[in-house]
Length: 212
Image: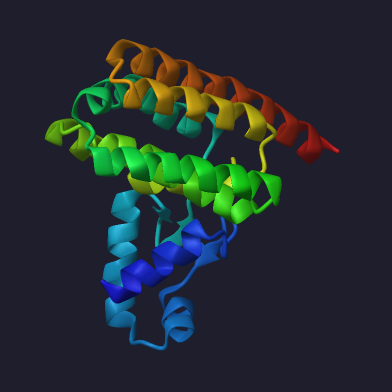
């Protein structure tokens, strides 16, 4: 599990390039362990979808536009429900944590701390999902959690919607804290739809760059 966590962190922190070929021997040398634990870690990461096996070779997941959209369509259905339920069930302590995340996000934006912006964005969404109180919803979201993080860290970390996403987070937070489940659901749905719209722009831009 330690080998799994280390390699997972390398992947989420963009230490490897999408599509890069990895070897058990190279990963074992990097971690200073035998190939046995690495082999099991690789198996788990293939299951998570962060690594892909093609024949006998292992590659870092290189998501296509369709891959990203598939994940975000799941988010579009499930996270608005999580926001609605969180407005009904979130504790006062979690309200305080949510407001703290908003404040820290604002500071990170003002100081242009890109890594912290991504981290606080992740904390924001994770807290709302966990506060929904719906075990099945949480379980479903956990299935795509690693891929979602990977895409957010490697594809969306520099996208130009930072001010807008913050304003959307504030509106979602206000609705949840006010106990307005319907509004929280609506705000989260629009928030994710805006992300999906931006994804198209990102991939079109990348395609133009690749063609030069």
